[in-house]
Length: 86
Image 1 (cartoon, rainbow, N blue to C red):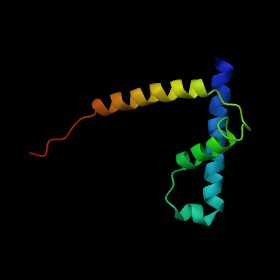
Image 2 (image 1 turned 120 degrees about the vertical axis):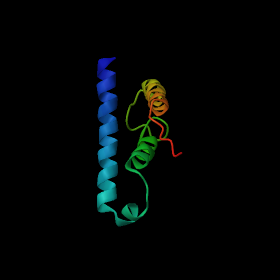
Image 3 (image 1 turned 90 degrees about the horizontal axis):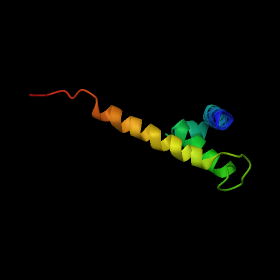
Image 4 (image 1 turned 180 degrees about the vertical axis):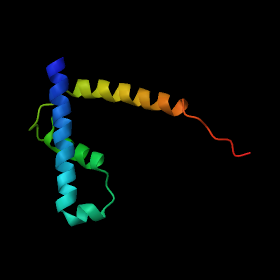
């Protein structure tokens, strides 16, 4: 379990690094307003197990990770202080 987690986070880090480098050295990508996370996800989709199968990523682990991180995000949204403009 621990090695799967480390490998998955390493793959995510490499995909983010590739996306950042692509946006830095390719001017049309810099002009388009595409977040690095979306570009990294698109690259991961292409070379991942869904399309070309060049990298091995545990899709079930990613699903569990997204499930829990989205829950934490929605909980944090509900705990924020709301300003009254009266």
